[in-house]
Length: 97
Image (cartoon, rainbow, N blue to C red; front, side, top):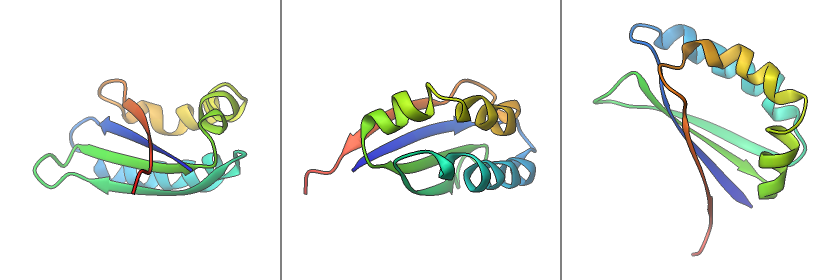
């Protein structure tokens, strides 16, 4: 299992709309991707325009090649991308303990 962590900064005052959009994007697009396991979204307390999206994937390739390189990614970006104040910072992690 691979954990994708995306650090997302959105435009001020767009929290409610972004949360609705990311929920829609996860339910209708990302969750349909091969290897998608589950997702969680966390909002910053000190920085309410900052969100951390965590998605569990079966393999790194399911995310990097299958999802990001496939036909679902443009649909995902069309839903959530307009809210981004800057490109998200995305990294992948693997469990060790």
